[in-house]
Structure formats: structure tokens, C-alpha cells
Image (cartoon, rainbow, N blue to C red; front, side, top):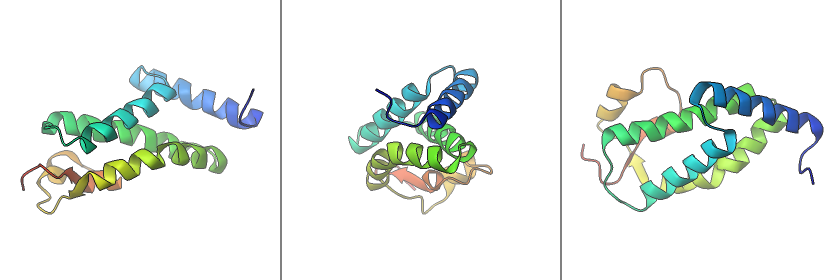
Length: 122
């Protein structure tokens, strides 16, 4: 049973191939990884800055696909990550010091780069 029109299925397949060539993981794997990361942050377990930046880069990869997608497919992808985005957002706070942003962000526009886990020290 296909949940989406053929055009959307073809585009999701195209985006899956893009992410496989870039990150060597499938689109479903990337979405599951973001879910895992959001849950990890929400669990309040200690996390290093290196591990945290890997989490943010994974969300960057999802956003890149959303931006490359057509409006319909982009909205589907946004819907698929919206719950995990909310979990991540509630488990983090604004990075008031900006120290993490300065070290890692560069020209990355995603709102997730302005957030740090509650346990991070300023």
C-alpha cells in the first residue's frame, strides 16, 4: 500500500539516494537517528560537545533534504520530524553564552544551533 502519490514516492527515493551518497545512511535511518537523538537529549544523560555537534549535524542533513524537496514532500518531512523537534526543543535551552554557537555553527541557520542541553554550562 502506497501512502503517498507516485511523485512524492519518487522524490523520497531521490532524497534517500542523496543522503545515502552523502552520509552513507538511508533517509529512514536518518529520521530514526534524529528520533533517537531527541530522546537522548530529553533523557538528560551527560553528553559531550563533540557528540552534541554530531546530533546537530544530523538535523542539518534533514533540513538540507527538506529545503531540496518540493513543497509537498518538504511538508511531509517536516511532519515526520516535528515531534522529535518538539522533544529536542523542550529538552534544551537557548545558548545564552553563544560559546557553542561560535565554535560549531559557522553559517548554519538552523534554530537547533541556538540550543544546548540544560546541563551544558555557560
